[in-house]
Image (cartoon, rainbow, N blue to C red; front, side, top):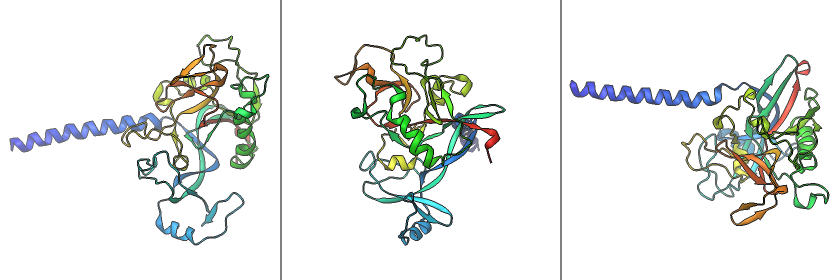
Length: 310
């Protein structure tokens, strides 16, 4: 009886420990309110019955997606980061090089940063794609490579992404985005790499946004973002250290904010011109820096007119 009572106590302690851990894990994400707008391929399809039906189809729509029972699916020949050890975020099952998988085209989830009577300020909850900030061949002679106004990623967000995946939604407001400072309270106001404000429908998130407590970014655990299964299958570099880690499948992503210092940056023995560097957020939610010529995760921001929402 004493042994049974001891085992029950131990079990009770273990149960309490697991419950508290689960609550802590959940609460890190549950406090954010979200909104859906647009579409993009995201989660891997696991329903074999639907897979079998899709395999019978030969025609794709104008976007290259298969359609079945009113749902679109993207088919991809996978090329993951690691040959044998890359896992999907949603299923934590292996994705293998060369295998063909279907991905569900679903609404884009946006985190609500600001909710006023007139508009919603949003940023994507997940990282759906990667881009280079700018291609080296597109840097103008009289412009810094880390100038967001002249960047390729800005052009992509306001053309292909806005027109196709956001369907040029009339509720998305053309907005003047503030590029005049880096982050709240950093005191750096004379950064020569800062560009003029940009007026766009879609903007890349800034380091100031990621430091703004009013947007909910109060600590590193609020600042990181996960990659979608579709992006993982495309070979994006994500946190794959352990499927049990809270940061599993998190990915580094660009901000639009340029590096403010003139000293050359040493990256594993290679000197990088500071005019080719921007701030990024790493896979643990920490400030980092990265070259503008490397593909990184993209976290768009939009402002939505609430009076035009259907």
